[in-house]
Image 1 (tube, one colour):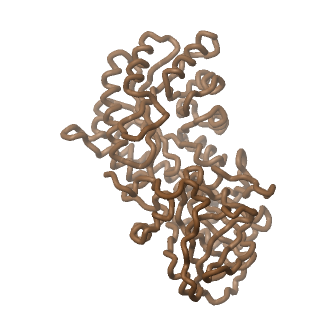
Image 2 (spheres, helix red, strand yellow):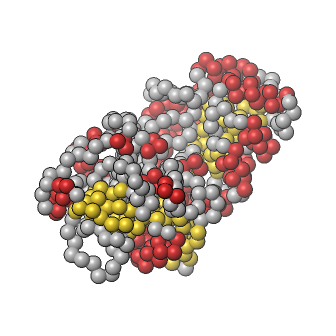
Image 3 (cartoon, rainbow, N blue to C red):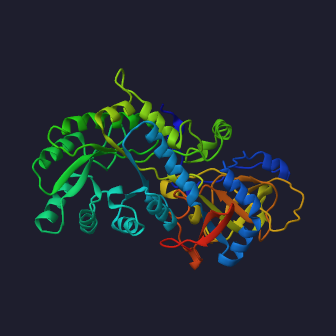
Length: 479
């Protein structure tokens, strides 16, 4: 079940922005372009149709709202959540799917959760407040994050939200709030432990601390132990399955002393496929992942398929995890973030111009800056090619070129990816470059208004009568 494709590569210089570009042979433009491996993005059919049929709308909104625009597709988000729910319903497992809202700041996804009855994983006071304001039921919210401040715990207590407690110190702090009369009712909690993984993490309780925490909770009037949680880095499905198996064993023991202990939260960590399998395998075979840290572009089990693999896992001769969840009547929580937003976002930038450089390489300058499309928070890149959309209906003959895509700031490191891309022709001022599948993390996790430039506008696209209709995004993070 484990493979290198499930892990984000940690190879290369950690200061990815400072890495030198690899040499490109000085040849004709077409020949140079052919040396660049193509990485076409996987496209949801509705996204492909939108780019093809709504070309005029893309240029209209680029003129009216600004040269860079993020497009949001809440209907695709809804379909992703429902696929996870479908896997759990088919397995007859009691469950709640909680959207990890940290991966995107746009209000439309929260509004969708409120309207569709989806749950939320909130990691701050602000996220908890916004989830409640969007109409998400308080019993469908789990508050995570380390050492939560008083205002977060007080609000969670008031509304009855579930809280994942990260440390013995946090347990002590909750007790102090209760003694001071600042909690309105007993707090519903999960104890977050480190799970079964060789990786070191600053989060969660060790086995020894978990034992101490459970002993301290016996007879506590201010806390109700609802179960356990864990959050693993990376995409190793077997480690997640083993951690769930161990959590089920612990919950079986805890039930002797805690009547309400019936829940396990297995966190996030469900990868998505940005490119087709053949594309990723060719890229990996030619050493593409050696150019620096990158997000895996393809995995054998992604999104809800990875959840199916976890549920089907068994420890030796024991029943499968889905059988054990049903047998023990355990409530399963999971927190997809990236996987919930797969294909639910698109980022479009206007071309300022293209400059021919050494080795027949073009530098294409886009309005905005690369931090409006960045995964550098994770010290990695997402390797997909942008889609060139011509400003003129009558296009020149296509002649492929190799290009580096840069932002409009005065920083040498303002590049959209360290990898060169192959474009169908030299972009011209006024053309658009569209990047697919940018809603998870890339779209707004690290954006900043360099040179006081306007942040990208955010536009929500929904269907009405078989046609896409748009509206400006409301709430935090809108342009």
